[in-house]
Image 1: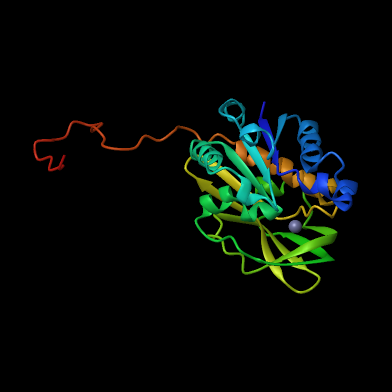
Image 2: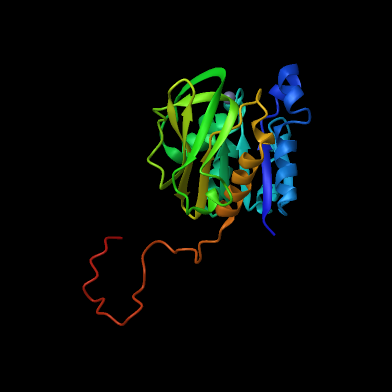
Length: 246
Ligand code: ZN
């Protein structure tokens, strides 16, 4: 069974009535319900827990980690970022949600600023599926329409995705690469844009479908773990002219 750990900054929900109305028990609680219903084994972890809830033990039993953060990216301990990065390179899947585009872990894994344009005007967003055969688009219509969304616009300063599954259009005119797949080491990383804290985006069934698909995709086992470094020949070859400098 796929084991998911849902990580949430969990500050807005406790500090803002507007946000608490939409996510009374936190964004992580809604996501945890979605993943449990999909049959995953789910834990949650939040910023203010010791080690941000991401101890070695928790990560040992995590196949896919989902990450939502916004106002407190700078408070995430670099040692935990190192730990999560190491796990991703080792094969753990990572879903990076909405404003987590600016999280330390996503910037670390991308190597770019991950900056973008934004505007908060409760405008319509249409997320077009641009890779219909992709498992992350499974069961989704040609596009997902959200009545109220925060706008994120290009340019989004990320490396070109290995696969782009969604492109968003916004009522105000901008477009955005909203569903981006990467591999880093043995791990799979999916960035998915929807999810602003003051709009009920994570209550949308199509968005939930994509999140579940994203976990399934990110949990996939890619086969053998590669070995690195100096290699003995598999077939008999003449090694007498080895010029390696030690
Ligand atoms: Zn937002």
